[in-house]
Image 1 (cartoon, rainbow, N blue to C red):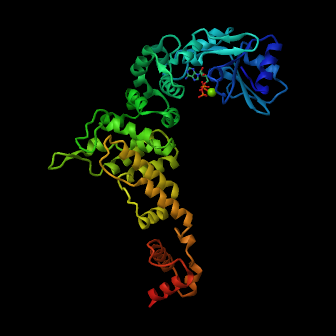
Image 2: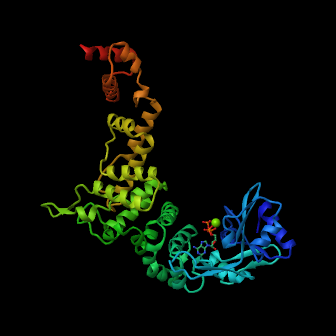
Image 3: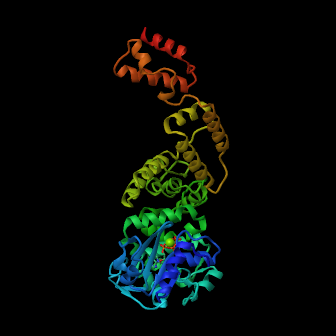
Length: 437
Ligand code: ATP
Ligand code: MG
């Protein structure tokens, strides 16, 4: 296994001092998969004070010392070295009540979540793999270390980690492990919302429809508002799927961009409560976009999502039913109001939403709409007050003052956007004069 020089040097220094030292966890898994690890963790039988002594000539990060982790600052970043440890008494399903330092690697590996994450490797001692992680990797199996129920009860975040690792590496979750993930999902209630949000942000960009269907019992625990959508028939000839299945198709159908994936996940939450029936017996969901946007806001607030993401998701969810036509003037107005990025994202959400109905009975020219947006962007035409060929000074020179300046500028922009006037100084000044008569 390849180790970067800085990591190898730390490992060798501990070995020189007669301690055992291994690369451990994610980096070993990634290397066995032929992937380049994004970081390397070391573990050792040296105690924190011994690690500190051995690296006394280096700058150290000691924030994790209590849990056995000493960070050695290298020119390549911080190498984390952790004393072999076990832990237990997870009264809150998350934090260990005690941490014990151990003398052998097997004990340390036994506290880890999944067999594929419970391997260690040293250049002198080879692979330590007491739980068959390598074999599971080869067979593409995700399996909890030891008793699955107990492991998820200790730390319920492992349930979401399991979802993520399974999807990321295309692993099939072994039956007992999957059952324990479902059974212990209610314990996710005890996990800090930020951590849940962080896991979901890593999961959403990589999930498929099948993954989302399989994870329904878990996702409905962390976002209870999803629960009424599961199996909720749409009673509408334009839809063949129930609301949750439709949501799954839309999530997997939008590009893997966080705000879009979140918007897709939350875009139809308001459907169950807005269902009404028309005279034709068809189900309708008047106002569901606004209701969903409100729910999305609450959910993202609860999960402590960053404000920028929350705002973008609310924007997308609340407008997902306002489907534009391939009309240049209309799209220019949207572009002016929302900017290119948001407009494109809204179109992408709407396209996936329509694609996720399971029937192709409506024609929407999304390709054409994007092409028009390309054209508008390439034209570099006037889309905001800033780009208008006259400014406040020009208006003041004509004797306009105070609030009237803003009003007039907006009036001019509106005309330019609607192609009623060229964005040329002389034409705009003439329009101003005409208005002043
Ligand atoms: P990634 O590539 O996403 O960083 P990783 O496997 O390195 O994957 P980390 O969260 O960095 O994941 O954790 C490093 C190692 O620590 C894991 O491989 C696993 O052995 C162990 N670990 C991390 N979190 C837990 C947990 N909640 N319960 C048990 N073991 C854990
Ligand atoms: Mg890692």
